[in-house]
Image (cartoon, rainbow, N blue to C red; front, side, top):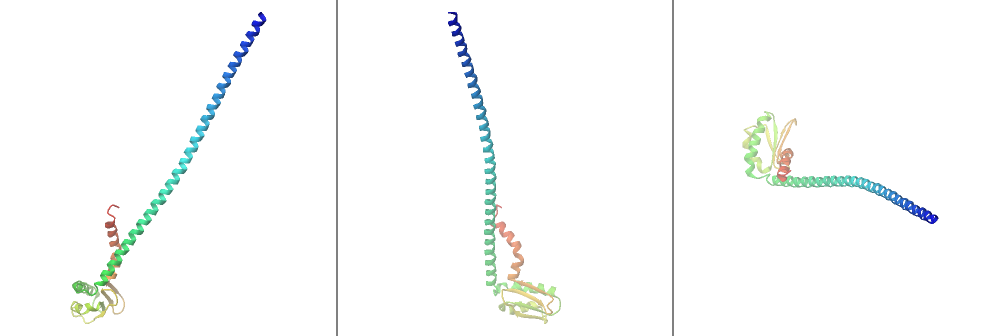
Length: 193
């Protein structure tokens, strides 16, 4: 029986060793699987971070382009609105070129201009309907010639020798005043900006 006991003991020992070897192999396989899963998860996270960076950059660029486009459209719309206001103002000023209600203002402007013009001969251009009313503002200066103004209302003073010209037409005044007026109008059109 000793041989049977020995064989049984050897067989049990072999089974035990095989079980331990299988358990070690399973543990090693599980460790390798876990390490692989961890590496795979880290690679996936790295790819997601890289993709997120790319997508955030693309979104930032798209947002920047959209903002610039919106700003461009806003500025164009504001410029168009200001241009309409300017054109409408010029039309209204032109329509009032012969308005007798403006005669006192034109007389005042002519008197002031003559103070600075000196005593030399000069020509004053004004709307046909205003010429007779402006004669009284000449202060008896015979060297001043009144002639009809071709174009918009207001006054144009010219030195006889061509040394200087003063454009006091409504259109000229609007042109000179427009930059400041446009700034103020833009403020009023966009009080929240």
